[in-house]
Image (cartoon, rainbow, N blue to C red; front, side, top):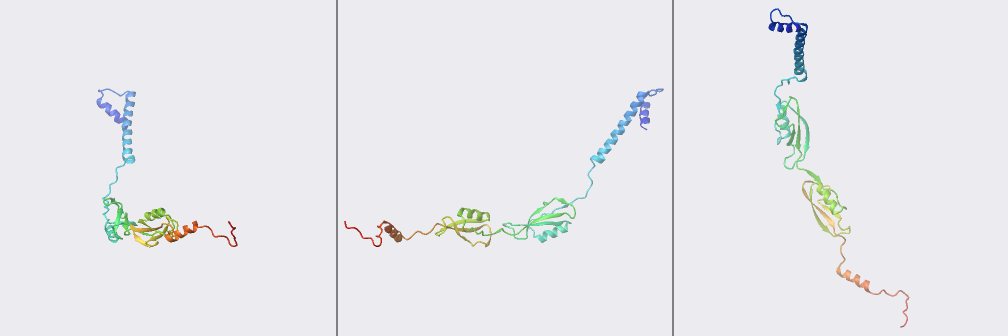
Length: 221
């Protein structure tokens, strides 16, 4: 078939009585084979290596669910042919508990029917328990309480505990509060000083000569 094609081309342009030589005949065969190889290669590249994208119908756009109650968000997804995926509770300073505050995928993205949408739901304002930091230094206690979300202040009181040590926490350790919340560290300023008269008496006693030992008889001058 290839030879006949090449031969017919040559016959169209050849003068009457001309017959192809052996070289011309092989040249025609090579030309036709090149055309066939090119067509085969193009077909492989177009259909196998780089196929055209399959035609698909339009996906389902993900609705915006932030600010809706969890039950309403679930209903809205089901009405669109989507499902609720993971639900994660997140503390939020403004949104009440049970309200959607985050979602994945984001609104507007296209999904297949039955795909899942994960939701982040507010658990209400963040809460924390007052840590028991009695016995710690004021600096260490303030750092721990601040990490828990409390706004720390300090007040000093006289105590037998070493100066700079926390002797009490207000409010009491273990109580739960919405944070940020105030917290007072009551810190020891050291033991109380003695009364002035007692201090003076101690000073006089230290300066007075020691009394003679029992049985001591002074020698005459």
